[in-house]
Amino acid sequence: MSELGSPALPSASSAVGGRSVISHLDLDPFAIEFFEDPYPAQQALREAGPIVFLDKWNVHGVARYAEVYAVLNDPATFCSSRGVGLSDFKKETPWRPPSLILEADPPAHARTRAVLSKVLSPAVMKQIRDGFTAAAEAKIDELLQRRNIDAIADMAEAYPLSVFPDAVGLKPEGREHLLPYASVVFNAFGPPNELRQTAIERSMPHQAYVAEQCQRHNLVAGGFGAGIHACVDSGEINEAEAPLLVRSLLSAGLDTTVNGIGAAIYCLARFPEELERLRRDPTLARNAFEEAVRFESPVQTFFRTTTREVEIGGFGIGEGEKVLMFLGAANRDPRRWEDPDRYDITRKTSGHVGFGSGIHMCAGQLVARLEGEALLAALARKVASIAITGAVKRRYNNTLRGLESLPVELVPA
Amino acid sequence: MPSITFIHPDGRNERVEAEAGTSAMVSAVTHGVDGILAECGGNAMCATCHVYVEESWLDRLPAMEEAEDALLDGAAAERLPNSRLSCQIKMAGELDGLVLRLPGRQT
Image 1 (cartoon, each protein chain N blue to C red):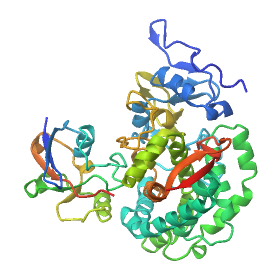
Image 2: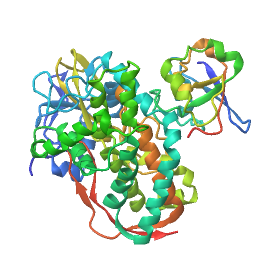
Image 3: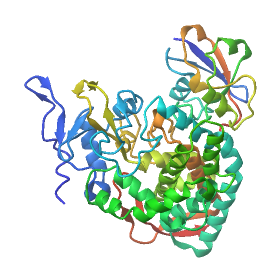
């Protein structure tokens, strides 16, 4: 495809006639070529200015850490209620009923957020920790028996699938809809390209499954889902809201950790010296996962919509404008990170925006870290090396960065 | 600039200068104080910047909000009456000399 253009050559200068104008770029961050190798284009986006304009989709973008962080942390100016994809809910009908948390603004957001924060709190993580750890040990043992595996299907997908749906309290039947549903959700944040259109066209069976599983009678007692419904009894949310909040767990709780864990394994397979450091000190597992989230940024982008005229980095933009935040580019911005293109499991990762930042920062971040830590700690103790044995295949999604296939040989320690 | 002294579990002291208006957590992370993880980056969502506030300073700190209170219940190290999340302690001139003890673990 020719849509990518020439990322090194922004088509407009940033100072015309003495007055600063926003650089226009003709690259398409939702094209296959971009997904295959986003780094030169992300660099071009950062270097073109604190804010850029993407002609392909008529949208502003921010790719430097400071501006991405600023937009994320000013929800009054950069709202979510008009959608966090390209589609403006004020002008277009959303493809599904809007999320009560992701696509909500203060003050309404605080109430629903409090419910998910309670259900996914550090105290709850303490209760599920041993179970997640045991499942991770068992998974690595099983995979070491097989030795030659696909690290995506057999590890990055299989492990979260072995713990998360049970933690939510889902019935065993129909779970094969979970990953396809999440894939639709994350494709739908993108522009009306083929990925988005195809995903939505094929989404009906997955939507029907998810809607049904969000109902109270389908959720096992003691799980996250039942915990959300219990907040109806205490008056924190109403009966109509609970299923939609359960839906948030099913939308954002699985595919994200699959890609996060996939990123970590892919990093450890490519950088054996980091795997060696991890093996020497398995307590680094949690940070090795966190650093993989910074390094690969499984969630690459989100949009906001301006609620008023506003200035970003000295450039004015109008009300009702979509702003595309490049989380992946911010996480490798040399203005913020030393040696940003290096995967370093001892890096001080605090402040990365792989889980977002501000009031909408990932509500499930503690579950993600628990899964990542449990799996990498088991791997650190049991696996001596991870050798890539075949073609690495990328999976294409408008929002999620990850692999379709990663054939590896695991050598036991 | 107000200063903060962090005391590690082994008794080692680290004194850092804090920028007024930023949090004690940011000062720790900026100066590379080990023992403050701050996984969520200061959004009061993770409880990995837990500190024990030296008793004499406790009353001078901003009041605890509900979210911080709930998070502290899940902190990895034992919650004590002087437990706080350092991301919620905003530094100001009157906190010059603040003393914070670091717990043995954050995760």
